[in-house]
Each structure stands twice: as structure tokens, then as C-alpha cells.
Image (cartoon, rainbow, N blue to C red; front, side, top):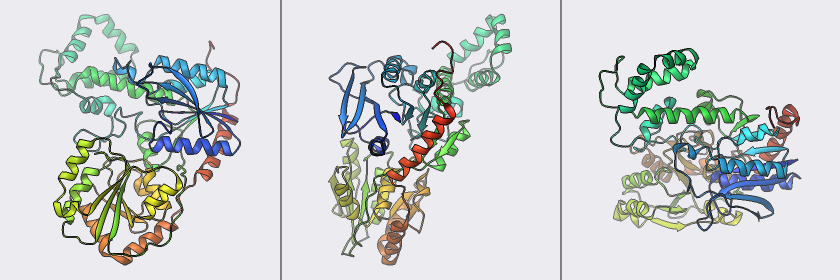
Length: 478
């Protein structure tokens, strides 16, 4: 079986949870006898946009297309890219895969599933995050609160709004229809009801009356609402061309289903497990570690705030393992830490992804703290830590509680409740029996291995190819 894997980044040029998973999966599928080619976007400031080159990464054929976002002139270029669509179409013709597995379309083009189906090639797509319903990926507002959903584009326009928006566009829209009664009749007759409802909501929320004689301060930019509404509907229509969507968590599955997405299969992701180490020897200190990208959305600043509540807690050391993406942010966070606690915090730097390095990180910790403010899907750090037998103290949002079971293999806290994380860290540090119990629970928790996961995917591939067939395009004109 020939599989084309499509992703928004691929090691060793790009590293992240989805990228690492794609790499592990590609290697495992190849070891199982499949022929795998990867098509990935990359950043290369020394090359022109849409330069295409092929390289081999640990035996994996990787075709990379450069996208430095130099063509991001309009809102729509962010999810529809004709040049990349053309590159993808040529790759399908040259490589002739039996199936396409989309890992992500971010930085590529939202219409790639349509192109694959047009050419008669079945596809599946794994939902790694919220990009298809949230341009900012994480359903996370600028004020560090969780977004409940796009609300037909209204929430998106509000989140992405700029100061100085007015209701002029809404007035122009309503006035236009008043000046063109025949077009207004046409719209009433032929425009789908849902679209008409959105237009009415735009005009109403912008503060116009039925006669458009009164204009109140704008609540939202109506043009932006329509843009985001189009994005939502467009990407949903494109993903409908996949034979099925794969969700690594039940939580993510429900979020997408609530917005009208169908045919979603729940299938937990597999990882390269970190074998549990020897039992931790109780020393003078309890070592709690933050592992992963050091950003605000991952809750690093929340962790620092909560550590300041533990100023009186002795016998604790905090280790930070990960990449600093914003030096000023990191320095600001550390500067806010009380002097007495700053001595208890050690930055250990980045770590390699090889098994020995991962084992060295997780085996050296009594617990991993995962304070993410976002509604995570199936966080890699959490699953790696549990597989290594290391308990996790994690926020109770998103799909994380599907892996971290409170009181069994870790502790959950509410990031919206000040002091809750500090309380859980204090509880963990002060109770030796609790630490032993959670460590045993972590060791006893089943975490899906990448080989086990790959076999489940291969079965799905066979089912999809059997039901979809290879009878050529179902669209006229190929």
C-alpha cells in the first residue's frame, strides 16, 4: 500500500506534537511494509515561496514545499493557496498513492481533500487541534480565556477585531439591498436560509434598525463576520471529502460534532513509549518538572504565579525542560518569582527526542506539571510522562482528563481557580503515600504504543479503500 502523508511540518526541521507523531507513524508504517511519502510545508527564508525539494529523513521520503507566508495578502490566502494546491496535485499524479492521510492543512491549503477525491484517491484526516474552526488554532482568546466556539464567525470576528471598527459596512450592506429591490427579491428566493440569517445577525449586531436610519456603536465588524463564516463553512465542506475524520480524544470529537462535522472516528494516538525507570528513591527534595514549549498558552506564567503561593514549602525543586520561544516572556515570568523560590527553580534547557534523552527527563522527576490554559486534545507530554511511570499534575481542560485520572495516575486542577494548582503541588509534596500511589497508577495505565496505533490505522486504511474503491474521480471533468 502506498500512503501519502500530508502535514504542516515534519522533523527535523519542525518539531511539535503533531509533527513528532507524523514522524513516528511514518517510520512505523514503513516498518510494517507500507510505502510512505510525506508532503510537508516548511519555512526556508533563503528560498522563494513554493520552492519544492525532496529529502530523506531517517529513510522517509519527504517532499517539502516552502511557504514563508509572503503571499498572505488577503484573509483567504490563510486557508486557500492555489500554488500549494497545484504542487499537491502534481505529487498525486507522480506518486499515485493508494490513500492520503492528512495530518494537518495549516500552512498548506484547505482544498487538498477535494483534490484527492477529485482524482479518485480516498483520504482520512486526523484532527490534531481546532484550526478548522479557529484561525488561532487553540480556541483561546487574547484575554487568556477559553473560547466557547466560533458562533458562526461572530466570536472569531470579535477575537480578531481591531480598534476603530464601525457599523458602516453593515449600513452599506442593508442600503445596497434597499437600492436594488430586484436583487433583494432574488436573495430572498435563492440565498439559503442559513446565509440569510447570518446577514440579518450581522446587520442587527452592528446596530442598525430595519429602516437603516439609526446607527449605534458597532459591536463587531460585519465584513469580518462574513469572512470568518465563509472560512468555517468552506473548511467543513472540504473535510467532508475525506472518507472519515480521526479524533484522538473524545472531547475533540464532541467539539467538532457540535459544529456539524460528521463521520468522526475516535482513535487514540500512539507514541514511542518511554519505558518506566526504577522506583524513585526518596531524597531530600521532591522534583516537579515543567516539560514542553515555554509559552503563555501552555500555562507557564500560571505555574510561576502558583509557585509564589508555595513560598513556605520546603523540600521542592522545580525543573524546566523545553524550548524558550520568547526570551522576554520567560525573563518576565522568572523575575516575578519570589527570591526565596527562585533558588528552587532550575532551567534544564531543550532536550533531544531520542529514547535515552526522554527517559533521562521523565525518570528524573517525581511529577510532571502540565498547566495548559487551552483545551488540549491529546497532549504528547502527558502521555509520555504516564508511559514513563511519572504522575502528572494537569489542568482539567479538554482531552487531558481522558489520560490523567485524578487520584489514580495524577492530580487535576482548575486553572481558572486561583490557588488550585498550588494546592495540588503542596498535596503531592507533603504526602509520600500519595506519591507512591500515583506512581503505581501511572505505571499501571495503558498508553497506546505507536505500533499498536499503526495497526489500527492500517485496518482503517483497508476499510476506507474497500468502501471507497479506486474507480477514478467521482467528479465530472477529470
